[in-house]
Length: 458
Image 1 (cartoon, one colour):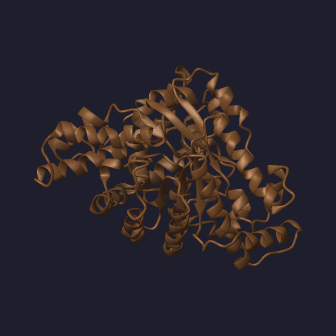
Image 2 (spheres, one colour; image 1 turned 60 degrees about the vertical axis):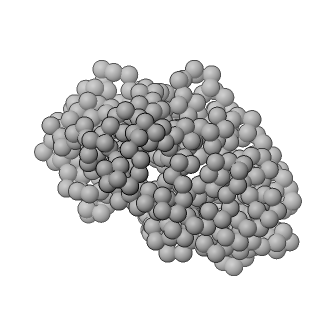
Image 3 (cartoon, rainbow, N blue to C red; image 1 turned 45 degrees about the horizontal axis):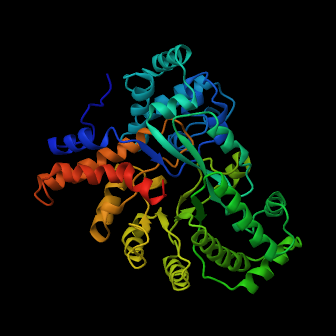
C-alpha cells in the first residue's frame, strides 16, 4: 500500500469538505500544455507504461540526472524496461520533489496500482501496469476523457499545419482541442535556423510582409478555434520603433550576422507588435517570463531543445514589462494577459504591476498565472496563493494548467486543488475568513474551472 490517503495534503476537516464537496468533481480546462495534437488525433493504444510515463517527460529526466544516472538510462539506448526500473529506483528516494507525489498519484489514478514506487517494487509495478494496458483501452482519448478534461489548448508554432484540429473535431471526442498561437520562432531572430523558419512561414520578402503574414496566420488559427497565444520571453526588452526593427530584420534576411543588441531591438518591437495584434483580434496572451534556457551547450547539441537543461533567470525585465504594458494601454492595445513568472523573488513585484492595468473588460483582465515549471510544487503553489491573495483577488484567478507533454499529468490539477482547499480551509479554521463553506466552495469551483471558461470566452 502507498503512503497516499484520501486526505492527502488536506490538514483539517474543513479542507477535506471543501475539496471533496466542491473541487474534486469539477471538470478540467487545460489552457496551456505541450501535448501533441497528432498523438491525440491518431489515438493509438500504448504498448507499455514507459511510453506514457517517461518517453517525453523532461521533468522526470531531470530528476534522474540529479541523482547521477547515466544518460543511456534516460534518453539513450537502454530498453524501455531498464529506463522505467531506473526511474522508480531514483524516485523512491526523492522526498519532497513534486514528482514523488505526482508519479504515485498517476500510478494509482490510471492503473489502479497502489504499490509504493521504489526500487524494490519497480519490477512488480512494470508488470502490473503493462498487464493493465494489455487488457484495457489505454489511448490518449481514454486518458483525457477519464480525467474529466473538457478543453485543451495545445501550443503550436505559427507555421504549423492546422488541418489536424479540424480532423480532431470530427473524431467526436468528449473534449475539445484548440491551438494556442506561438510566434517564438519568428521572435528569436538570432537563432541559427531563423531563415528556415521564415521560409516555412511563406510569402515573406520584407519586414512589412512579415508582419502582414503573422496576422494572416493568426486569422487562420482563429478559424480553427484559437482564442489564446503563448509567448516565451527570456527577457522583456524596451519597445523599439518600427524602422529600427525593420533594419535589423532586413539585415538578417540578407544572411548577415546581427549583434546581441540588434536582436534585442527586434524583439522589443516584435513583442509590442504581437501584443497589439492579440488585442485587435481578442486573443488572450499567455506570457512566460523568468526562464534561462539551454544552459548546457553540449546537451543542447546532443538532444535538442526542451530536454531538461533550463533554469530560473535572475532578471525578467519588470521595468521594461511595465513600459510595454503602459504603452499598449495608452494606445488602447493592451490584450487580456496571463503573466507566468518563474522567479519566485519577483512574485510581489509582478503581482502589484498587474494591479495597475486592470479594467472592466474582463474579470481579472491581467492574470498572475499559476505556479509554473520549477515553481509547480507544493511550496511554489502555497507561496503563489499567499502572494496572490495578499495583493490581488483570488476570486478572479483562472486556476491551474499542466504545462506538460505527458497525458498522465492531469492529476496535477487535483494536486493544486487540494493545496487550494487546504489553504482556504486553514484560513477558515483560523477565523480569518467566512465560515460559509458553500460560499467558499463556489469560489473554489470558479478557480478550478468556471473562471477559465469565462476568461477564454467559452
